[in-house]
Length: 368
Image (tube, rainbow, N blue to C red):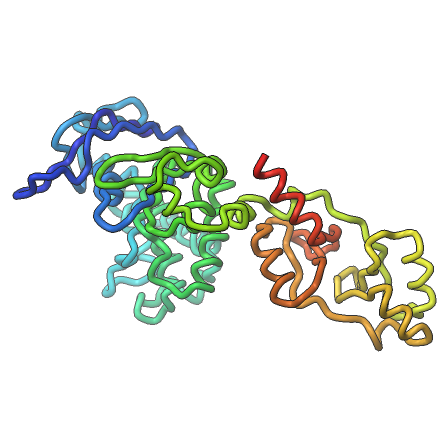
């Protein structure tokens, strides 16, 4: 889909290339992350795809076509672009910001309205509430969502994303990353994603290109990058605890859930004891109206045998969604000193239990 052939870029008055003889092939539907320190050439590489930066030597192909034989305006109108500073037009409404490319492409008014509403809903921004507002009335995370919506407006096959989540707080950043990955699973866009954060690269990328001084040092899947860094530079970039980092690549749904007995508030603890006798987990999950509430352990049963479940059950600190990563699972276990978590599906229905032993096994299998 995107191919760099021996691409070099010099800036005026510079004797060293910003990008040096770069050859890279990015398949259709793949999210490729360019990662490396400031000044390594990653943003310049990305900007050459839509000709914001012009190539000095070499050729870039998009869908088999030399981009220098294409009209530059038409090229850019068919490539979504999200930048770190978001870049919304402050004097325009949210609707007009999202529809910028659609106006340029002369879409009919009714189609523009329909598309804007669709995208704002997709970004969890109610159109009736937000589309007539100005960017200054939105939070940083909301403005970032509008920026992504604008880039997606004309349904471009290619998206360029330059540190798109770097300007928001860590909690919002994680939520935006998760939401975008969910969208990408449905959209299957061809994406070049620039970041200096190796943890973000590991989480977001189908493949990662590590850059240094204008060259690609290693181009691999996140798993291979963690397991087999090719140089000391890559090893230092990946950092310590690669096994722990690899847990971000595994989803809760990838684990064979343990089946725990379920009980309700109305049950007596003596009834729970019977359910635990033939179960190795030593816990029973408390449910009420099909929703998970907490758990009771075998020790609770011993200490409070004549009590009601509602009196002694322990609430889960939070529930794990089946698309949460195992790094999140492990973090919750360590933070709350528990050896298991309950997993629920997208309807919050109980799926099963993941234990600390499952985490250990996942680390071992991911290293093999």
